[in-house]
Image (cartoon, rainbow, N blue to C red; front, top):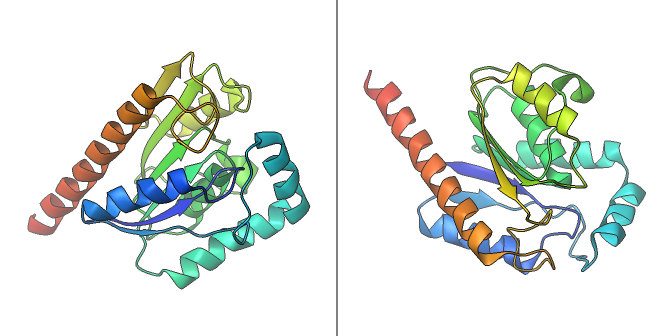
Length: 197
């Protein structure tokens, strides 16, 4: 089973994300949810983004590295929106991570000072269109990670997957969760196969 670092979006570590983490734990995974906002949550994405800007990009990067140091067994990263940067950073920088799932965010690898590691499994889930995601940034990452799978959710809001967000869409969220749990199962099967080889 996976040991997961799950990084929250601009609204903070919401009840919706915590509930999703609990469902992953019920499937047998270990899930750590670093709280970069120290308990603060928001109802409005703009307010959350302003709060994150006050923390600063460098501090958010350090929070990601700190979580990786604290949870040395983690080998899969999931990042939502703002947290996608943190997840992608660790997937690029730390060799122990075997898989990365980005939700509502992606960056060109060079923007994080590195290159994409081709051995890292990658999934991207994004609303289509999404006012917070630049298509060129996703396309650049996909160019460097041609093995990646991308799922686009037409007509949905940026945080469609989180019941705590006003853009929540139950049907799309269910589809996202089904795809995520299936992906984690595939990762486990692949790991078992490698161990037996």
